[in-house]
Image 1 (tube, helix red, strand yellow):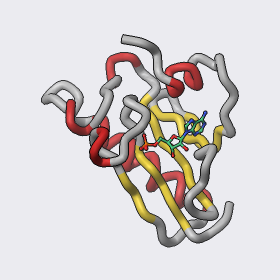
Image 2 (cartoon, helix red, strand yellow):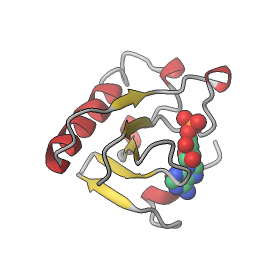
Image 3 (cartoon, helix red, strand yellow):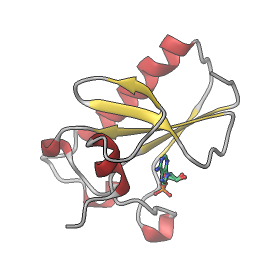
Image 4 (cartoon, helix red, strand yellow):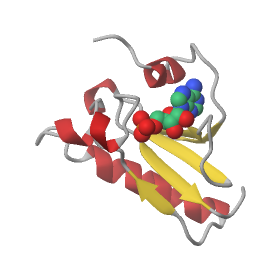
Length: 110
Ligand code: AMP
């Protein structure tokens, strides 16, 4: 499998505006924001890699929950009260990058 742009962000090979970083999850600003705050959350560990919700298995079923928990923690840290969370699932669902990511969108600015 070819490394995706998000693999390169984790490896530090291309820059990203990182706003949330733990041992397991990275959150960074979407390069083409669709809301005043638009963050992408991804799982950092190789064992947690999954390309899409469509490809989730019993072994990776915990990963979306980790991303949602990270988004919730981020919102609390930032004092953001309301937001939308979205997964684009598969090409026909608008997914362009095949490295599972959670979109966090809020009308509140950071
Ligand atoms: P999706 O359509 O769910 O696959 O969304 C992929 C998202 O990644 C889009 O919203 C892009 O704007 C965003 N994106 C692509 N390249 C980068 C990058 N280098 N840094 C930050 N966001 C990116």
